[in-house]
Image 1 (spheres, rainbow, N blue to C red):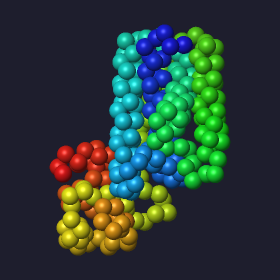
Image 2 (cartoon, rainbow, N blue to C red):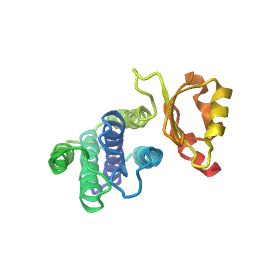
Image 3 (cartoon, one colour):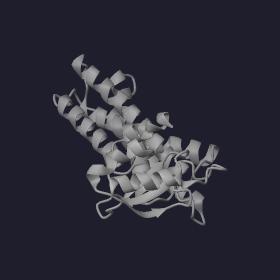
Image 4 (cartoon, rainbow, N blue to C red):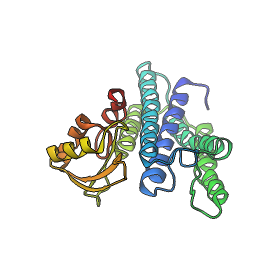
Length: 250
């Protein structure tokens, strides 16, 4: 199944989608853990949220490499098979959860699926089977039983592109029932400077940690981008690059 370049690119894209699924569902929606939840000394909410952002940037890079490779293979008129490509995508999704379980949960111990559970290993194993082994097996069977080359490879690539972009984009939007904006500020940005910036932007402070490194604001959506000009590293509801790479101005 993995003998052709386009199946390997499909596998890589599936890994990225698995990472998006993990980060969006477990880090943001359910909030069962963050990337570095169990790392000693990393207890600051600002640091946890920031590393979650870096994790999504990595998934974007993997998805971009996979999509670019698939498109190049299509232009080379490679004999791409829709069913096999779908199998590679599903297998990659499962492979991500297997790697995450083995490395992050059991070897490195940087987080668990549900860190506040009385039996965290039960959650780890259940997730490992349901979202790791099962998709990997399904993807492998689809790849082995693929039929003749499909003429709709272009449609499949467009679908995968939309799926990858929408999966990453979903991580950037605020929940539909949440009118507020969450902001992570630079470590060297003083609370007094933050208060001045919020007053200038007409934003109302709803909540903040004692150091004001993480704040929840009531601010018009069209003004969110302006927060990056006032010390913000991450701003919910905006694009990843401007927030995650703003650390270079610190």
